[in-house]
Amino acid sequence: MRSQRFFITLAFSFSLLAGRAQTAQFDITYNSVPPALVTAFDDADDIWSQLLMSSVPIKVNVSFYPLGANALGITFPNGRRDFPSAPYADTWYASALANSIAGVELNPGENDIDIFFSNGANWYTDTSGTPGAGQHDFVSVALHELGHGLGFVGLSKKVGNEGSFGLLQMADFFPLTTSFPWPELDTLPGIFDRFLSDQQDGPLAMMPNPSTLLGSAMTGNTLYFNGPIVMAMNGGQAPRIYAPGAFALGSSCVHLNESTYPVGNPNELMTPFSSAGSVNHDPGLICLWMLRDIGWNLAPGVGVDEVPPTASFSVFPNPADDVITLTAPERMQNEHLALLDAHGHIIRVVPSTNTMDVGDLAPGAYVLRVIGSAQHVRFIKA
Ligand SMILES: [Zn+2]
Image (cartoon, rainbow, N blue to C red):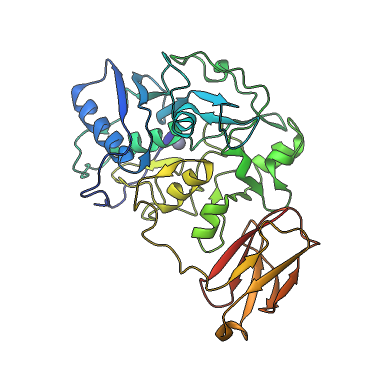
């Protein structure tokens, strides 16, 4: 969901998509949506259709609704799990993503995404990205909500001190109801949740569910997304996730952290708050790399514009149990390497010798980076 933030900022926009082809198709149903907003929504789904690849049309149901004081939009993705070729078992995928992975429609007759937009917000409905003071750019908010519908979302919930995955019910969002049957979530996490990791206590999906440990991790202000692709592409750093001290259903654990990616940052789109007067028509590379981590295929050329230099060395075997062998060209042999954990923290610094003992490392994703350089490789400790 996206909420209002009450200050005015300078507008910024991108022309990222000039000349791209559509590699995914959206079929939209509009329920009493004003024509000007239909045009603006089509602009937003056009942007996503040029970034992602799917052979199955993505069915979206758009409604206008009195959402209350500060909410601009809220999105419910349909879900599927344990479908043929699902990368992770016992894990929910947004049905639009599941369909793109499976290559067939797994939910015939059901929408993939329900989006409710506030019918009381001061919307800027033009697509040119020049809202007036106090106006919310509808294309930006629609792009954000579609991001959730495509899978940038989890199944976290906190009641009292107890956090959980997969205990969400439609009633938690009363009086809203989805156009598709609410899936029986069976206390299972979503694929997005599988990459959430607390700085101290590690992966959330490894914690008892439900539990106070999970609840604490969801509100500790130290939550990160340790997907191997976004980390490798982001110089070894896991992006920080919004997890304030007070859990906010629909905002906590399903957005990039507001203060890490403030207005003006190219990765601001998937933060929880929208500023009136600001414009962002680009999901940003971190969001796109996170979508790759959860299983999306990006359109050719998308998400590779700012690839850090690939390493001139490699690691073998990968995944590794006890010892890794580094293969490096001669000129690297006096370099030092930093071993980073899933949060981008340096665990140790080693000379770029031939082998390294990794037997003591906890299982998971790690990055080896040349000190003073963006060159790095990723490896998995089995
Ligand atoms: Zn949101």
